[in-house]
Length: 159
Image (cartoon, rainbow, N blue to C red; front, side):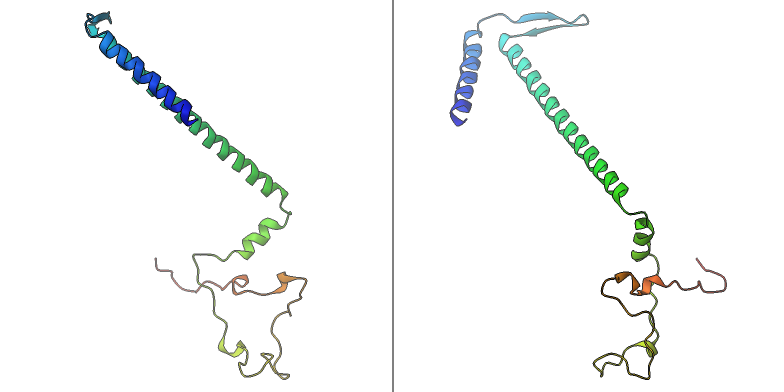
């Protein structure tokens, strides 16, 4: 690839050198555009064609990149839709319950319900255990602070 690239560069320089030195004594070409006439030397005409080709290649490159990005977005949306369709029926309700809301504070547990730090189990025989005991197979029985909603404070709301 390196050798092929160098050969192409040498061919381009030979053509440019021929146009520069071989057409320097030729008269400019007159191109009538209707409203005005343009006079171009063969070298200028060649450079204008080369610039047009560069612009064409850049346009094709940008078009290709845009189509790839669009195809990638379409594929991602298709995969996300398929993933949503494959979720279980209770998945939407469970996910809404499991997510912690961002716009409200998490209520704190009262001081009396905190476990005793001195004992190994966290509670004594005479203290009842609050809430259901977590089962190893069922993690949905664990009560989180976000599962309990507080009643809104009474009185006028200031905003």
